[in-house]
Image 1 (cartoon, one colour):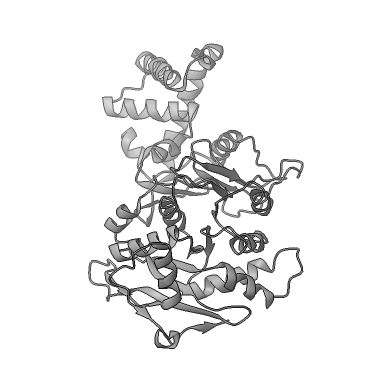
Image 2 (spheres, rainbow, N blue to C red; image 1 turned 45 degrees about the vertical axis):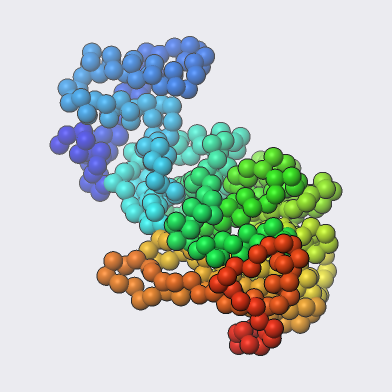
Length: 446
């Protein structure tokens, strides 16, 4: 069996393990022949070129006899092991991959175009996987061991990494690397079918008229991508503060301050939470605050900021519908140490939130806005939402692709007037209605 076929064998342990041994042997030979002090003085690209040249000489001198393709593949594998992340290096170089999931040494999955697939790759051993994990977390000055078996961090290159090892992970060391695609503009999202021109006009009007928006959706539904695109509509002269767990937003305006939370150090000290950053941001004279995701007590601070002079702010929340998003905000707000009655949180949400944009990820991997809803309730009354856009799917055909159309509904008169006062045009597809009861029987929730 050739080297290439051995590399591609996912389950037949003998040949794959044999190849892993071959890589380890030549890695050891390579380390014997290089000058580590000299290597450390070279730039990363020069270091790789030097190692490839030295390893090529070793293979020519000692064997094995390989075809040019197999030789190149072996050299790449050995240098990836020596400098980079081993079998993960080609995956990180593949721009089509958005998520890498390693479920122990023998199981590697990736996500491409919204679909998850298993790859015919494996680590030679659990020890090799742990070495790769330690190399990753060491770049962000973190460590992982039995006393600290979970790590959540952002790499200098922007990827978000999560690690969990035994005894917590029963299948072996588990590594998840989430790569963030380039920033998409709203017109590009129209081309992908995530929204249409009328929705773009409406959302642009909401952002420029300083409506407070909540972007809601499940994991991987595209919340950060949409939030980034919406933020591009904010006027360039405004002072924007972004607050995130892992910095993902890529705003293009000139006056942007990016804040990122910090986990505790190995002694359990030095943690800076999203809530700490939200509170501090209020002292920084922001025109708008963008919170990458609210997931705890910082929700109350964010709601208070939205309702006390920081109109036009944006945030995301994990929820499966616009109604669920509001109920989740109420639950998260109650997690603050401030003893505020649960019912009183309705008042905070009703005065703070103007629009909920709901995203969904469909069975074919596509992501789109499935609802734009306005919150029209006041005070402590039950949440009342008015949908103004819905995605209506058609039955899935043999191609398993989700098709459908966007349905546009009238805007309540007060919302249309707020857009008019801000000199924002009303999109032609949306009319205006005077009586809320005429809009939707599904208004009162909670």
